[in-house]
Every structure is written in structure tokens, then in C-alpha cells.
Image 1 (tube, rainbow, N blue to C red):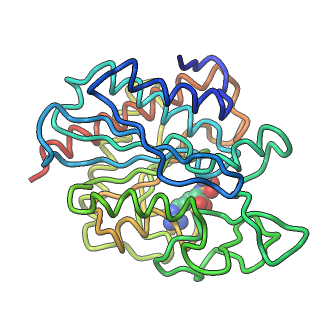
Image 2 (cartoon, rainbow, N blue to C red):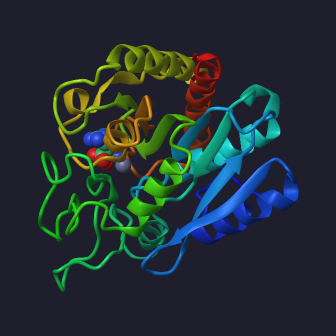
Length: 299
Ligand code: 0X9
Ligand code: ZN
């Protein structure tokens, strides 16, 4: 069983996820997308909709950045809520990767709490790890990413060089036509961000992205009154290329593509106190419900 009173280790998360099909037979499927450099599984949780194979898909990932511990917790909480209230999810199929970067997550528990990247080898002997959110193959290697393996925003030797990047790409592309929304859960800063990240212009469907994003922020406000700013990530945050959200919209053509920066605003930052895990997760859940309702009705 999952707990949100403290952060769960990767082993606990894996054990919990692998139990789900026994606990909710027929409702959920768990599949290994790939294995990491340190041979850990990247697990995909599919929560089936009430109806047929044609239902729209919402794809969510957590734990892309190792130190952002609120993110896998929120992803796991989302899985739990969806399974406990299937009527709320209606005709949407949810595909969720709770921990996209297990090696990094474990490293942030055992060796360096502030680790961000994966644990992939680089051309440098001293420095390990690629920033998965600089490794995606859409305007890869442009703004806000580094060529230096020792940088925390190292983009990798080439686009999609990393197993985590490929796992996500494969999982989205295999349901490409059905995936209507993609959300990458990160921390911190309290933002609902949409493309583009690589440059300060916005995509053709930015009006819809803005409107749906504002709906998500409004839903978050009903939880504990927290304000999440909504906007394009290059303008609101900083330009950074090779992000999964840009790839999802630009390459996979997923119309509604977001990065959410969960709690807080920077007081605790990455080291969120355990008593804020549940509020942070509830905010993510509120935003996902709002998105789900929109996607279910979208023509
Ligand atoms: O810089 C990032 O990768 C994200 N922020 S974080 O503090 N969690 O590292 C923001 C990514 C926004 N999207 C793109 N730049 N494409
Ligand atoms: Zn992040």
C-alpha cells in the first residue's frame, strides 16, 4: 500500500505498483517499458476507461528529475484516486509513469539529495548523468541546455540518447492518435506551463492551452487557495530546449501538452516537508481531474 505521510523509496513504489493488478483486477495494467542503465524497470501504469479502445488517452509522467520527490508521490496519488473513483474518470484512459528516472531517484536517496539527472555514462570520467528534460528530439541542443557532462542540464551526446527518453517516446507514440493530453509532473515553483520551452513564441493552439491551463489552476485554487501561474514555459520560466512537453506537442502532435511545477514556491523547494506531500498531491489530482473532464468532452 502507498503512504503519503512520508516519501516512498523506489523499492516501495515499485512493490506498490506491481501489486496494483492484483488489487484492482481488470481495471489496471502494469508494464515494463524499458530498463535503465542501472537495470531498474521503468513502469507504465494503464488505467482502463469504462468503455472501448477508442477512448482518449491522457499520459502523465513523474520523477523525471531525481530530486523532485513531490512528483512521483503526486503521480502515485493520482493512480490511487483514479482507481478508487473510476466513475470520475469517465471515458478517459490514463497512462502513468510514476518514476521515469528510477536511477536518479535512488541516487538522490542514497548519495546526493540534490541530484537531478539520470545516471547515464558520459564522455567525462568524472561526471555522470544526462538531464532527460534536455534530451528530447525537438529543437534538441538549442537554448538552455549544456554540452558539458558536468552540468546539471547536460543534454547528452545526441537527441534521445537515454533509455528514459526512449521509454517515454515509445509509450506516447504507440498510442499517438489517442493521446490527447500529456502532463509531466515536476517541482517546484507552482506553475502550469505549456510550450514552447525552446523559444519565446507560442504554438498555434496556444489559446486552448492557456484556457485549459487556467482551468487546471482554478481547480488547484479550490484545494488550499494556492496560486499557480499559467503560461508558456520560455516566457514564464526560461528558454530551455529538448523538453518532453515540446516533443509531445511538436513531434507526437499531442495537442494539450503541459509541465506542472508542484509545490512550493521555494521556501522548502525540492525538500518538501512530509506534511505537504498530501496537499501537493491533492493539487495535482485537482488539476488532472479538470484536465480529464475537458478531454472527455473535447470534440
Ligand atoms: O527546466 C526544466 O526542465 C523544468 N523545470 S525544473 O525546475 N523542474 O527543472 C521546466 C521545463 C519546461 N519545459 C521546457 N522547457 N520545455
Ligand atoms: Zn523538473
